[in-house]
Image 1 (tube, rainbow, N blue to C red):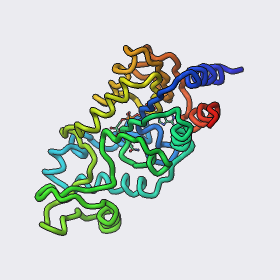
Image 2: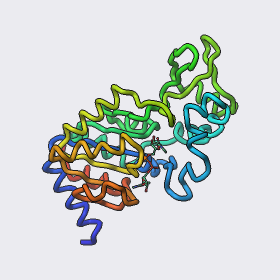
Image 3: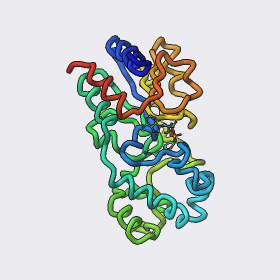
Length: 253
Ligand code: NAD
């Protein structure tokens, strides 16, 4: 057995013993669906843009056209992406009654499209847009299609204000009720499975700190090291799309 297989066996053993598994996912779970993450060299979105400007609330308000120019190719990729075997594996673990919740930093909606139902999107999602003048909320689909096709900035059909996707930008507070629910799940779990996150974005990246003191096990599946590897019971430097299906296959429905 090679080292990777041995680590997967250790993770399976923890998974089989656990009764309340919570997954914490990041951009790395969606790279096998063709959506670039933010920090991996070459594919990383921040390699080409300054996040403080392109994806900040202040930058959005100052220059919505620049924001939409930045997000247009990203939105196009997300709207055309399909769930991959890692998303499907987590949905299977929920169906099997093992996985109780997914806390995701992703805005791509691929967990729900894979069939997961208990999903806490702590950084928002691209399902809706909100008017920054009258705060009316709209389904995002038609507006994002317009953004992708015309290259313009979408406006509110009621008041003409600028529409902003319901994603959390730098300088914005996280949705309190979603974050509190995520914190409750982190404290309730007996196994936290981190998949495809650098864990560098707070407060989502700090949620393992809430799980560990309760006695929960921690498994981290990520290409790169994270600053919480020292807390983990098992660290697997492998592809989530290879590893997660192996974990899910070990659990009988
Ligand atoms: P990140 O970009 O900081 O880190 C992603 C991590 O995943 C990296 O450490 C990388 O090594 C690893 N990784 C990439 N592909 C992998 C694979 N196939 N298997 C295993 N590991 C893999 O992402 P983050 O920690 O999620 O946080 C950054 C922020 O970026 C979040 O706030 C999120 O909202 C946003 N974001 C979301 C999306 C999306 O919705 N798909 C995409 C890009 C960024």
